Image (tube, rainbow, N blue to C red; front, side, top):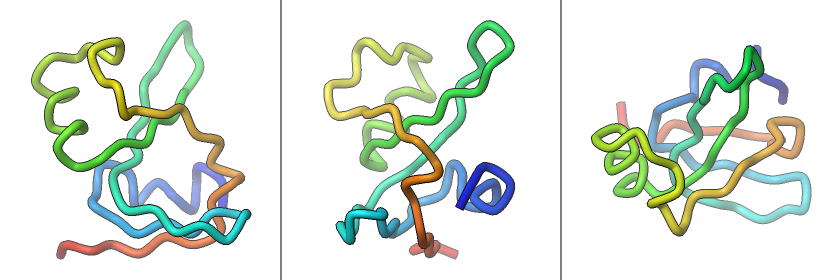
Length: 78
């Protein structure tokens, strides 16, 4: 989907369909590092923890994602 199309789904609880066909539920958010954007996926609770602590290393279930691997996104909460 790319960053432009997915931007409305960032920081939202969503269902994502990956290129592999797998469905995952959680949150994708952007982190700026040295002028580059990196995107991470985690559960809603781990995303809240990240927002409170701003520390990725403390989050065990957080994964860096390539937005091109996401073929569909759907918000779960209005």
